[in-house]
Amino acid sequence: MLTNIFYGLVLIASVLLVGLVSAQTTKSEGLSGAIGGGVQSSSKYLPGQEEVLQKYTTWTAVTWMICCLFWYLFANHRL
Image 1 (cartoon, rainbow, N blue to C red):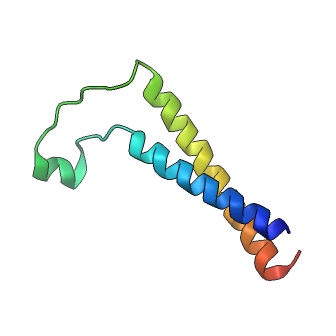
Image 2: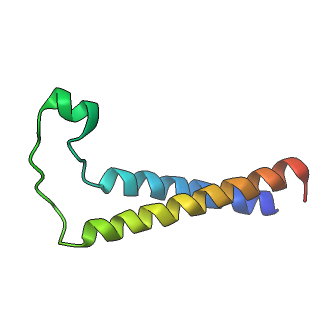
Image 3: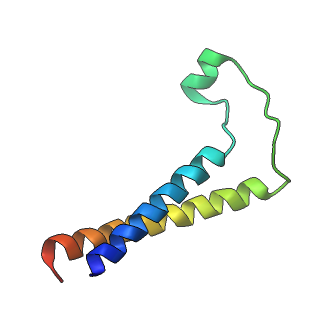
């Protein structure tokens, strides 16, 4: 029973995490910035909204990791 609950939470958090990561603006750093050239950043969000999006992404990732841990424990060790 708990295994199915954590499985559902992992699925929901996974989809939410993919959406949050893909909604973030890209920075023209690293290899992609060197190959593609410097892309000028035009923020599509209001000031401060990127920080809020980053905070939600962090909390969703932490929730996903905790749910994965409990899912593993309940599925394999029958706690």
